[in-house]
Length: 320
Image (cartoon, rainbow, N blue to C red):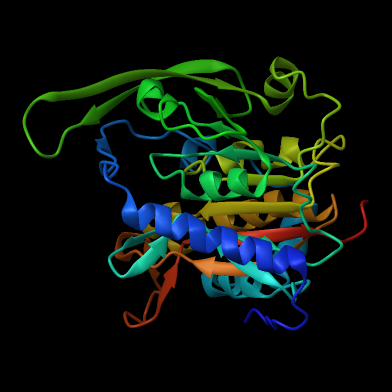
């Protein structure tokens, strides 16, 4: 359970709260509502596929098997905070089926707080919900937005000051991929979009950001996170990042037998440990309560576990 207390009210806190209110009012008073994102026909290929799952070393298996003996062990452990944020706010998001979706948490504690006069954000995975990106740009951050799956021209006209959009996705290799969107309201063909994918190092070089620290990194990339976590967690690539907000997708376990479920979860945990080695500690856990992504515990049909969830990491731990 996340422990949050709103004690001393600083100018930064007041500014951020005003920012959130302003962004919300803009959303409510918009004369041209943004269309709902269509449904893609494309099936994501990533390391959640069984035939691509790398093998864990025997040492890693022995280490994880000491505590990870059932699926619920993984999901219980990932909820436990390793550090606390005393002043946290939710930024952006839209209401969907009674819940707020696509919001991100930002910690205002002094040691990890963002400075409006020197703040760089990388936001991977936009869709057509730019509420987080808008509100952080109002705050003064330079927000670099990445998404290879959406229509660039539709977003370009909506960009705010301090926002930069790139039709690029993040992955472990360089390639391009075609996305075919389906219009749900009629039978007309939807957009056909060819998006580029590139590596963290190549993207940084393309933006001439090799020496520019990223202060807040947002990853909402629909399963691709498992392909790039190990690379990001090595060679000091995330050295300047103070806060890391990541949506994790583990729904692949829903369709596999128990013994295979544990193999996947051990591998997922091994990837998360790459972040821990770079000093990132879990502070906030927020499940995504969507029925299709709930895992039913074998033998107990009433016990369902969210396999998709948001984590906010703060860089407070030792690097080793």
